[in-house]
Image (cartoon, rainbow, N blue to C red):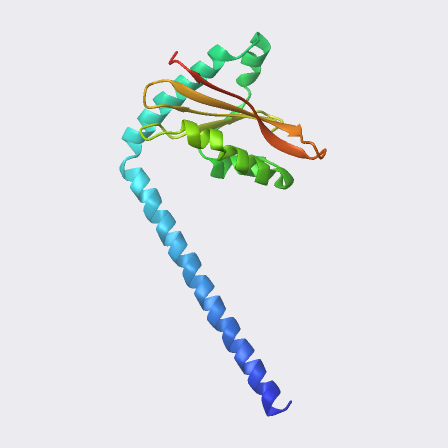
Length: 170
C-alpha cells in the first residue's frame, strides 16, 4: 500500500468515527428530549388524562349514536382505540402507511381542527381496513373523519376518506 492509499484509508476511518460519534450524540440527545417530554406529560398527567378520557368517551358515544346499523354498532366494540398515530401506524401494512399518514393529516383534518380542540383519537377495526379519527371541538361538538382502505384508480390499495361529520355531544 502506498502513502496515498494509506492516507485515504486513514481519512475514511476518521470520517466513519466522526460520523458515528455524531450519530450517537444525536440519538442520545433525542432520548434525553423524549424522556423530558414524557416527564412533562407526567407532571400534568392526572388532569390531562381525566380531561382526555372524558372527551374520548364522549366521542365514542357520539360515534355509536351516528353509526348506521346495529351490526356496525356491535362491531365497533371490537375496534381498538389509539391515542396517537405513533402507536396505531404499526398496525398498518408498510405499503399502505404513506397513504394512511397522508389521510390522517389531510386537508379535512387541518380544516376541522381548531385551537381549543382536544387531542384526536383513532379507532381502528380488527382487520385494519377502516379507521375513525375523532376529537372534541372547543364548542363541545365532535369531529369525525371516517377512513377506509380502498382501491384507487390505478388498482392499488390506498386509504381514502369515506365520510366527515360534526355531531353534537351525546
